[in-house]
Image (cartoon, rainbow, N blue to C red; front, side):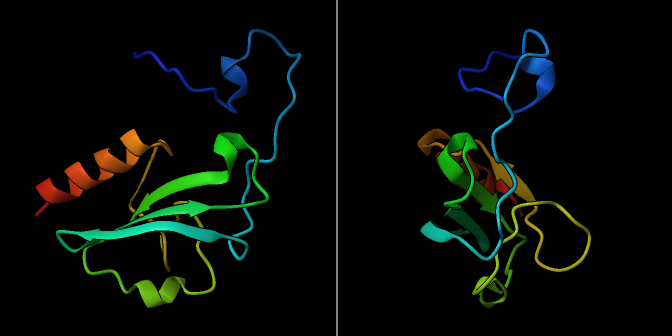
Length: 109
């Protein structure tokens, strides 16, 4: 249980059935890299998807230790999947979320 100051695209968070779903599925080929940092070997990326409306199109992604970032040159998919270039974690796309990713990476083995 927690308190969130941010909106949600989950229909369970809406008071009723009268809601409008915004485009929340990014095109993995249409992105801008806002920030990139490697902490303790873990790449952390702040990515902006211009075609996404929730969180103004921002996503903060962490990848496995020593991940080859060249694999993401033309395509960054923020979704989790078993093969390929899936992130290992996502964070709320704010400065606080970015700093949380850095803190966690510093403390991983």
